[in-house]
Image (cartoon, rainbow, N blue to C red; front, side, top):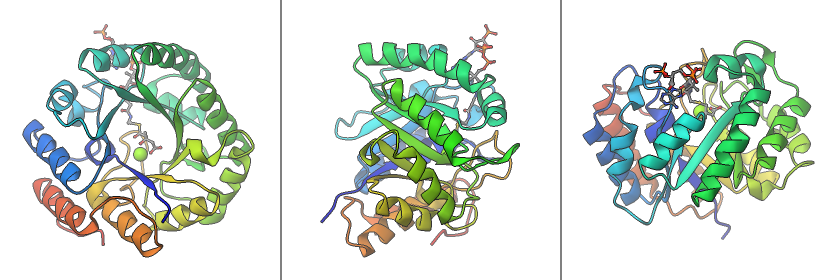
Amino acid sequence: MTAIRIVEVGPRDGLQNEAVTLSTADKLTLIQKLIAAGCTEIEATAFVHPKLVPQLADAVAVLAGQENTVARFSVLVPNQKGLERALAAGARAIAIFTAASESFCEKNIGRSIESSLTEYAEVVKTARQHGCWVRGYVSTVTHCPYEGKIPPEQAAQVIAQVAALGCDEVALGETLGRAVPEEIARLLEKTLLHLPASQLAGHFHDTNGRALEHVDVALGFGLTCFDGAVGGLGGCPFAPGAAGNLATEKLALHLAALGYETGLDAVALTDVGRWLRSRLEQRPDPL
Ligand code: HMG
Ligand code: MG
C-alpha cells in the first residue's frame, strides 16, 4: 500500500481568515485532537505581523504549548524577523511563502517575488544552520485574485527558484480554488521539468469543490504529499475569493478509498472538524 503524507494546515491556514479568533487553549486542544486522530505533520501557526493576522497573534504560546515529540510542528515565516521570533519560540520546522504572481506577492507580504526570494535565501540559510526542516510555498500557481490566470511556465519558474533556495519541499498553492484539473496537469508538466514529484506537495483550496480531482491528477504525476485543513476551514485574508482548504477528513477518506495509507482516522477527524466548527460558531459539515 503506498503511503501518502498529509500535512494538516488547519491550525494555521484554517484559522487565519476566521471571523472568530480561537482561544489559545482551544488551539492547543485542537492540536492534541489532531494528533490523536493520527496527524504527524501539523502547521501550527504563523509568525507573521500580528496586526495583519490577529487570529494567529498567539503564535509563541501555541508553539510553546506543544509537548509532543512525535508530530512535526511547522510554522509559517514571512521574513527574517518572523524567523527570529519562530526560532526564539523553539521552532524546528518552518515554511516560507512567496507567489507566482507579482500582485498577490505584494498584497500578501509587501514585496516583489524577486525581493522575497532574496530575503528567503538568508532565511533558509539561517533556518538550516539551526537544524530546521524547511518548506517553501508558492501561492497563486494557477490563478491570482488580481491578475487572473497564471501561465504554468511562470509558476514553474518560481517553484524552481524556491526549491533552489534549499527547501526540503515546495507546496503548490492553488490559493483561490478556481483551477480545473487540466490546469493542475499543465502546471505539473512544467514543474516536473525542474524538480522531482517527491519534492512537491499539493495545497489545493476547495472553493469550487474540485480539490480532490486535483489530488487525483497530482497522484498520477507521482506526488505523495498533500495538505488538508480539518473541517475544510481556511482561506487567505489577502486573497479575496479564496475559500476553505480541502477538508482533511474528506482527503483521508478519498485516499483510503483509493487504497493509499495515510495513518489518519477519518472518523476521528470528522469529529475534530465538527468540534472546531462549533467552537467557531460554524455549523455546516464539509462532507
Ligand atoms: P511589513 O510591514 O512590510 O514589514 O510587513 P516591515 O519589514 O516593513 O516592518 C514593519 C514593522 O513590522 C516593523 O515594526 C517590524 O519589526 C514589524 P516597527 O519597527 O514598525 O515596530 N515586523 C514584524 N512583526 C512581527 N512579525 C514579523 C514581522 N515582520 C516585520 N514577521 C510582513 C511584512 C510580511 C511581515 C507582513 O506583510 C505580513 O505579516 N503579512 C502577512 C501575510 C500572511 O500571513 N498571509 C497569509 C498566509 S499566506 C497563505 O495563506 C497562502 C498559503 O496558504 C498557500 C496558498 O494557499 O497559496 C501559504
Ligand atoms: Mg492556503
